[in-house]
Image 1: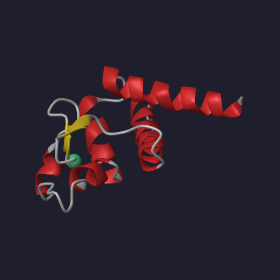
Image 2: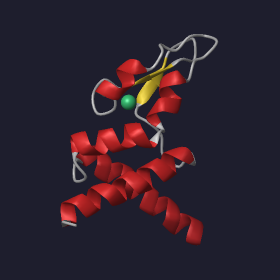
Image 3: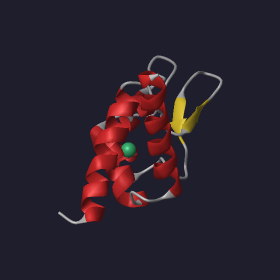
Length: 102
Ligand SMILES: [Zn+2]
């Protein structure tokens, strides 16, 4: 496997795990009804268009989706493993691990 493919695979695993465990979070914002919307830039993808719009009863439909492996894989494949946003998220994960080890 090429380095780039390996880096993509590693980034998917790390970011999926960290989002699942609430170490990092999808980029986006909450409206005044506490509904989460993924950031238009660097988070919203084609896969998100099949997700039901958040409602007051189900405010986190996008938030749950953006933590799935499917979304994380699509995100990293689109932005690339060396893009700024992905590098930042990976740096937060590394820092979290270092802090935990102390
Ligand atoms: Zn998505």
